[in-house]
Each structure stands twice: as C-alpha cells, then as structure tokens.
Length: 112
Length: 115
Image 1 (cartoon, rainbow over the protein chains, first blue to last red):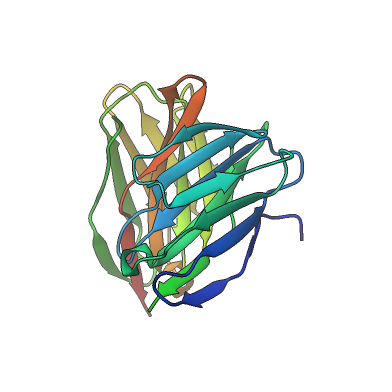
Image 2 (cartoon, helix red, strand yellow):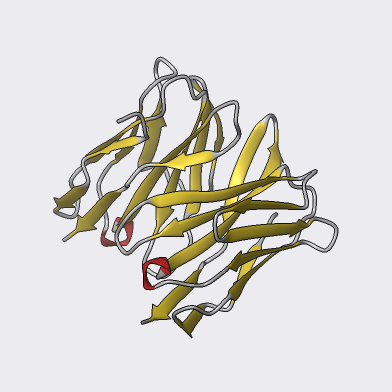
C-alpha cells in the first residue's frame, strides 16, 4: 500500500496519560500536515512540515502538543497530559509535486 | 485568515437525481481547491483538485468548478447513487506566510442518496 499510513487507528487512554501517534506519508512527499477533526466539523489545521522543518503551528496546538519529522519522512504527534477535550480524530496528510493532498485513515483518540 | 463555508450542511435526494454542492471562501488568493469525500469514521478521499488557474475539473460523474474572483466552487454529481452517500468536504490551499501553506476546510455537506 503506497498511501498515507497512520498508527494506531484507535487509541483509548486515561486522562493525564501521554499518547503518541505516527504518520508515514507517501514516499518522497516533502509536505506533511496534521489535522484534528471533531464530530460534525471539518478538519482543523494543527501543524505543517516541509521536509524536516516545522514551518507552522496552529494556536490550537497547545504546549502539551509536540510534533516531529526528524528525517523528513515519517512524523509523530505527541500529546502530553491528555484531557477529555483532546478526544478527536487526528488526521495526517502529505502533498508531493502533484499538489494533491492525500490523507490517511486517521487515529481516533478517546480520553476517558 | 481564510474561512470556508459549505452549503447546505445536509442534503437528501432520491437516487438518480443530479445535485450541486456549494463551497465559498473569503480570500480569493488561493493556490488550489480540493474536494474530498469522507465516509463515517474514516479518513478523507480526494475527489478532484482544481488549480487556481483552472475553471473546472471532471472525473466520471463528478464535475467541480471554480470561480476564484467570487470565492466560489461547486461540485456537481450526476445521476446520484446510494453509494455516493457520504460527507463532502471542500478545502482551499493558501499561503499563510513564511513559506507555509495551509489547507482550510469547510464543515462539509452530508449527502444521503435514497434508493
């Protein structure tokens, strides 16, 4: 499968725990985005990487959130001290030279 | 700041009908516009990408148009089928400064095609 891959697909965690999600973009796509989507809403921008450089972070991304893309390939999104309000679908997308954004299947986070 | 609005929020049509979904955006300085489909609990599937210099794109029964100057796009679905039932999302790609480009989404139109 050469699409965008996200892991895990589902995560249930207790409030206060840390969680980490992984995104593997389409090979050679240099742009990678993270989005968050809650029920009935469109995806909201969290952060953007071009290669390994994190070029933009949304104000939605509090100090508890951190994202990395260490070698310009896969990316991780970590949430520390999770809160119930963090429950959402976390989506990753990559864009290559063709400019079409391809999304993964998402990681659904439930904080209990 | 770019804002994207999709109307209607929900739409129910009988099978076989042609339909139009609407998307509007506030800042016409966009690079491209993309339509996506999302099934419940799933990720987004790209349907059509229209570059800012283009007026329309077609794929099978789908046709998307773009009027950048008025900040509008439409997605036309011909001969709708029950399998078309999903949420349709519109997203615009724009430059948010310092070499960064964002995709900003509308809230989507939830389409139900009744057999």
